[in-house]
Image 1 (cartoon, rainbow, N blue to C red):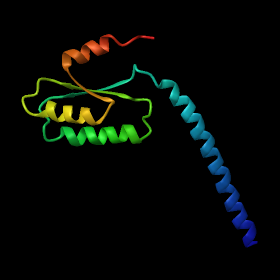
Image 2: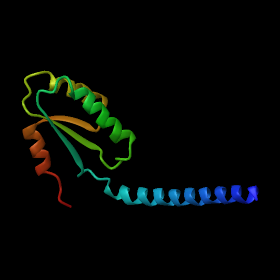
Image 3: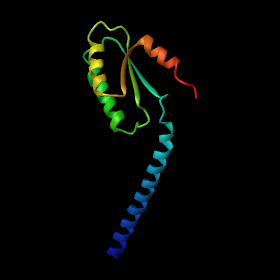
Image 4: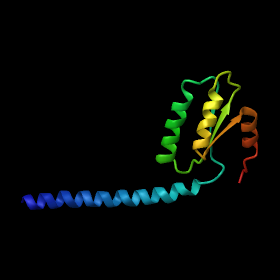
Length: 117
């Protein structure tokens, strides 16, 4: 009787795992269609010298090592900061290829020039 219960639990978990693998494969093929250059994450900052590095590093970690694989363009738009916010963001820009630091005007130009296809 104990062998029957253990086999039932084993096969239940095996079938569940099989369905999870199929679900992950379907998700991968579904979400890879969205990989394009037209998806941007725009972060507007102003006078955030104490918080900008921690916020950007945690956001980049979630995006680069998480499930947001289709998001490859991150723009930090500086809104005329009076502190060292822009310099800190520019140092991070050198470390990460997907990060770009611009002014708000340049960010607006990028948005206006994105293809609508």
